[in-house]
Length: 64
Image 1 (cartoon, rainbow, N blue to C red):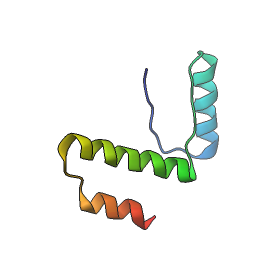
Image 2: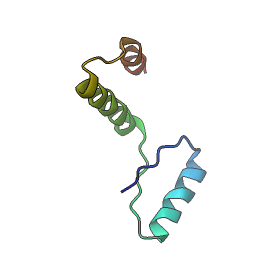
Image 3: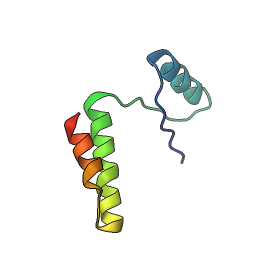
Image 4: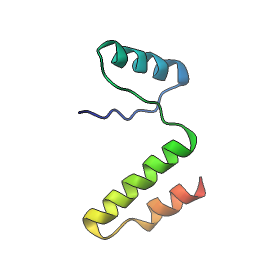
């Protein structure tokens, strides 16, 4: 399993998703709340590994 994270415009993102699906892969575009949830999950994972999450990173995500 591989995960691709990229910031693309809508047209390019849709092209990449279609390309991945043509080779029988699974792809999903995250936007809005789903993308925010993904970022918070990353912070949680980081905190579970190190017991410390950068307060700067957390505040930056909460400001959005």
